[in-house]
Length: 378
Image (tube, rainbow, N blue to C red; front, side, top):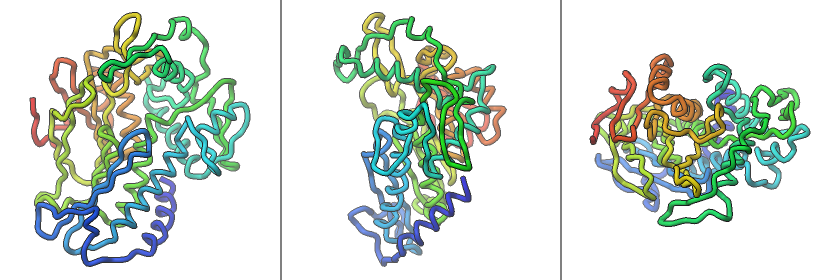
């Protein structure tokens, strides 16, 4: 990532003129399971339409001012939240919203957003079925149809489940301009434009993973041990965990359910440092069709313009990969492949592992995933 984003802006100006303390701020920290270790956590609920939390693990040899670290990470994440937001504009920021609104001209963007767009376009093109990229940031005109369906004033909600009118089939017979090759990036001017009319982009299926990778590059550079949780579907661990004698992090994957909330989990993972875990599934955002009572989830297949459907009864897939941005891309693409084709793809992709939770409650996983499993609960 662009010389680790200029060494994370010169290490966030030397950790904001770093100060050391003899004891962490106990407003954020609690004593860990091992004497001399502290777990320090801060949570934010204003970014990426989810709850984000960062836990730092400090041993007795390191006493950092955790408030400075939390402030720096918050600033990084919030900056990318604004860059990737397609619904809102911000003073002094040209973002995805700006690009989409100015879709007949060129939009000059910051280097960081330009780098993110370059990264995702380069990598999404490597994951295709036939000639179709399964992860496609240019799919936004189709995504808007389904977003508008979820936000339809005629939707009703009962016990947290929304029932909405399904878009008519004729809507999907239109010729949408969604070829990512028609997104024009000019590195000399840092401009973004479109080769065809009525194009727009969406970075929602990629943004959290990429932004998390930027933030954890900063934490890695500082030598921290941490877990960054950008919602239950996007987690990255870093450094050796001083709070466990084996140095691993133990993370549970919740059972995917259409209920509003469940704390049940189906597997406990034993995660070493520098591993990202990202989950995609049909249970996370959906509505029930008012006409047919079918479930319509938010993962839209670019081959059909429709929600991902049954897909061999896969409810969710979680992927493991070192790079959080790639993990976000892979999780969507692998889910859209279905279990059989997805497994073949994962087995053939270096550094990628995955676990599937099927509709019948059974679990399947790739051959290299076993080393990360501490305990299966079912």
